[in-house]
Amino acid sequence: MSRASEDSNRRMLRARDEMDRSYAEPLDVPALARIAHVSEAHFIRTFRATFGETPHRYLQRRRVERAMFLLRSTDRTVTDVCMAVGFASLGTFSRVFADVVGEPPSAYRRRGPLAPVPSCFGMRWLRPSEKTAVPEKPGNDGGP
Image (cartoon, rainbow, N blue to C red; front, side, top):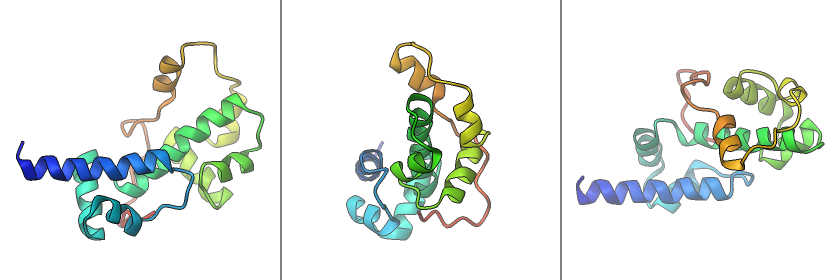
């Protein structure tokens, strides 16, 4: 791997780490591109090439992962969970959740609380993957 490629990967990891830390905050491509020290268009292209999905889709999936945990381990309302993980609209949250998980948040919650298994196994088992998720619609510009 070349030095330039390593530097690019490091920049993308820096932005992805910020998304992981601040998933519930309003994040946008311009702010993430500044963190990676690249232009917005270059950031979207390079992030997708590095991680296999757009920054927007990654952030949505990260928010849904957290929502999955909150829905199964707390008694918070679906609306409260939606707002807690960073979605501004219940409709968007429900649509994205169903796209990623395969069922709406209320149906997912009805399956009951998480079983008492080690958290590392539970988190891995519950983590949605791009292999099982509904693919992005063509024409998505990648912006959050």
